[in-house]
Length: 358
View 1 (cartoon, rainbow, N blue to C red):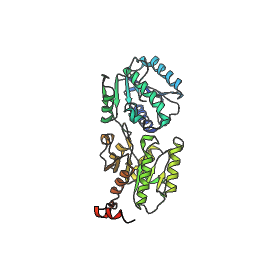
View 2: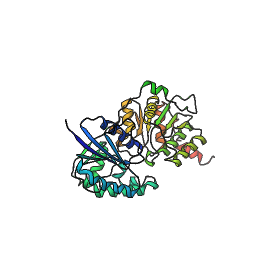
View 3: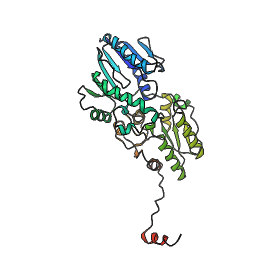
View 4: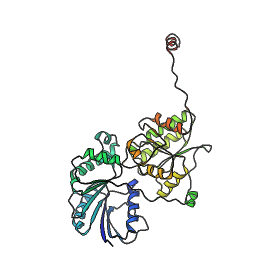
């Protein structure tokens, strides 16, 4: 039996999809008999799964920039005692390690075009610029790069054509299981309109590229057609207070059937996924799009952006232009089998008559 040791470097993960993947990875590593020793260098805000044994040792660090830089020196000193270092937080080590080093890339904003980067929230652009510089300068310290999708593979190869070390497609999603009792016991938040017959679910953080604002406008357009389907969102009040308020204000002022669940557990996400009529996914960029993959496994219809990342992990029921709220609204209407009134277009003679009559 092999007796491997693993150094798992995740000094910048504590929330979002990466947090879910990290928890799933640790749970599987804990029961893997081929790996005897695991050290996890992690953000001190990260909360690991409660079921882990003492086989996994955690070394939490403060998320300040100096501490994160020091953590790279720390893993350099201890790397000779491990067989593999998995850099799970998108960034390669700043020093070449003595063990095999695998970089797991799951943030498309580190390798996408600068134009797409600068369409992000102004607040996070400085951090992303620093991380892109770090990524580019120290990528040579990675022996292999793992990516989550064919689209990410192509974007990476285009951005770094002179990176000759192996690049592998290695997507994975956590084990999905929601018992019937869990689903029935879920305290569903009621929608405003009790008579609604359709509900749509968008499990996503409040990052700018998740495109919530166009989705809100689309729901206002639906309302103008007399349609008010339920939309469940998962935007945290603490992490995204401005967007949280926009959702609340828009929903109230336009009397829209939008319920923001806030930050919810993964099991609750899966429950809402099972109980909704469709997943709606207007994100403008993703390295993977875990809810798309999960919805495909659950056979939940998907209404999504017509972008490459979607087709890497799913076959959508219908698609829309994510930059157009009207396109999003019409896609929802098609799903609801509601035909909008045809646009009013005059013939030439009618047009001429309007020149002389009000």
